[in-house]
Length: 107
Image 1 (tube, rainbow, N blue to C red):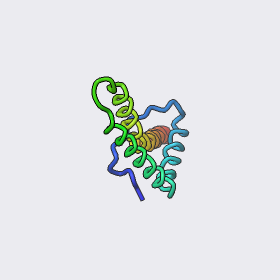
Image 2 (cartoon, rainbow, N blue to C red; image 1 turned 45 degrees about the vertical axis):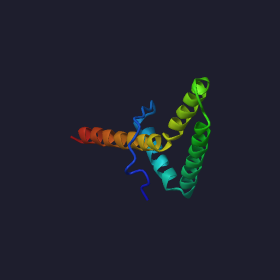
Image 3 (tube, rainbow, N blue to C red; image 1 turned 90 degrees about the vertical axis):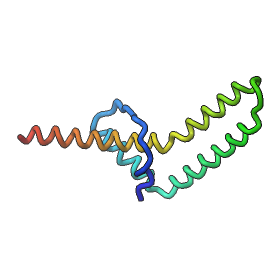
Image 4 (tube, helix red, strand yellow; image 1 turned 30 degrees about the vertical axis):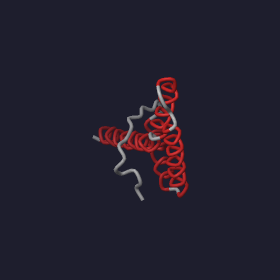
């Protein structure tokens, strides 16, 4: 199951070694295949609905800061999948760079 194949990746920069970046990417892939991932997604969707309900109660300019805080929180929660995809991409890029370096060494 590749739950994030259509999810755009959020660009992530890791300061870890290339080997560790590959490991991180693989660990996140495994996480996405774990049955608990679907529960986490369902939980975040529920939380977003709760935030939406709170937004519906915001009225007028006195509540502008509350509105901004709630919408910011909603946007942040929505980034879980793109962050995961970004971590996977970093690992895949690191793996490709490691392969290129091995090929150069063999030449």
